[in-house]
Image 1 (cartoon, each protein chain N blue to C red):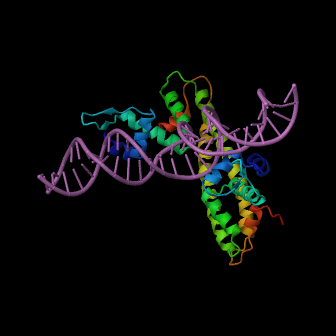
Image 2 (cartoon, chains in turn orange, yellow, blue, green; image 1 turned 135 degrees about the vertical axis):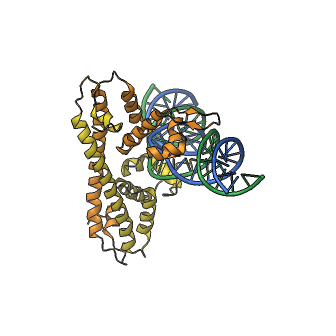
Image 3 (cartoon, rainbow over the protein chains, first blue to last red; image 1 turned 120 degrees about the vertical axis):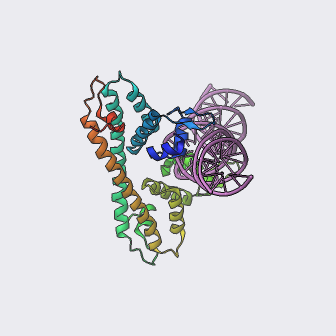
Length: 130
Length: 130
DNA sequence: CCTTGACCTTCCAGTTAGTGGAAGGTCCAT
DNA sequence: ATGGACCTTCCACTAACTGGAAGGTCAAGG
């Protein structure tokens, strides 16, 4: 399979696939014409990567997950540890965003949004506490 | 005031302050020794930037907000528009993260996390649907 | 007067995870 | 043989800093 085919099949853009090869996540073979020749196992890996990335795992995490996936002697605890760390990170991000959302939501609500200059959003950012 | 003083007073790191000057967000004067000489208005701007960034506004947004802040002829609707867009963006991010959190949370819960290799997390990423 | 340490300066490189685009080679169908 | 759809590499760019090196400045203590 050529890169366009695996891109379509895996949902990972061709450019991204080349990038993944660059950083050593996959090692497709090459045909005589220089084109990358993907095997089923490459496609499989790319789909794995696509799903991992969709869950927000970093490339570094994906690399470890892929290694664990191919390691028959793995312990599920290793996988779970990575996932748990990521889950904690997600929770932290959600908490941060929720706090921003709360503050900003209040400010937006309190701003008239008309053609006058008075604006509680700007006042708050300038710390002109009312 | 030197950069260290404003860094302390504004909470914005010195490196970041230099960066903000680089990209034209602030224009501190210079002393004879070449040191940046910050006025109160610079400090004020930096604090404004610090608070804007803490609410997750992009640098581009911050630039516009700062301009609006200094524009007496502004309409609060312009400010509100920027803030509303950002709020929507935050909501989108929270929604994305919440979905990841839900999926990943299930997977983590279902993984034994012991020394055996069987792992629903990896199975799911590999799309070996059970 | 000299030194020491805490400042300050600029500049370069690296971070994350790709994306866009240019220049050029290949393949297949008409 | 020519056109279009592929493919290749390489370089630059994104966001918002951060780290570090090399070197100048300033104030205090000996």
